[in-house]
Image 1 (cartoon, rainbow, N blue to C red):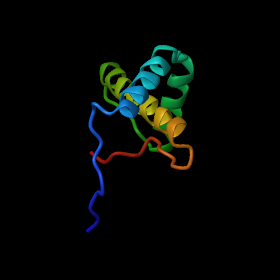
Image 2 (cartoon, one colour):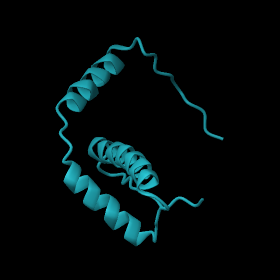
Image 3 (cartoon, rainbow, N blue to C red):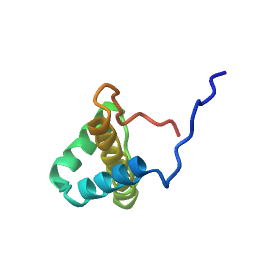
Image 4 (cartoon, rainbow, N blue to C red):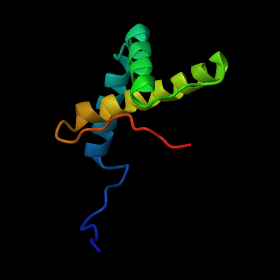
Length: 90
């Protein structure tokens, strides 16, 4: 089992600077909803997903969009690690 050699406090100056950078980045992010909808439709086809109603599809799209944005942000922050949208069972 690995143990951390140190811990980072929210009060550390480096953590404060990183939080400011993330906040400034998030404020400047523009999402093209049409592009995101195409990504969602492509994902639905790839994962063979269908939904019983437009309301359910809209709810699932909202969740997909939030997850895709988080994955995109993680990929931008850590280019050597790839995050993506997964097929969820259930």
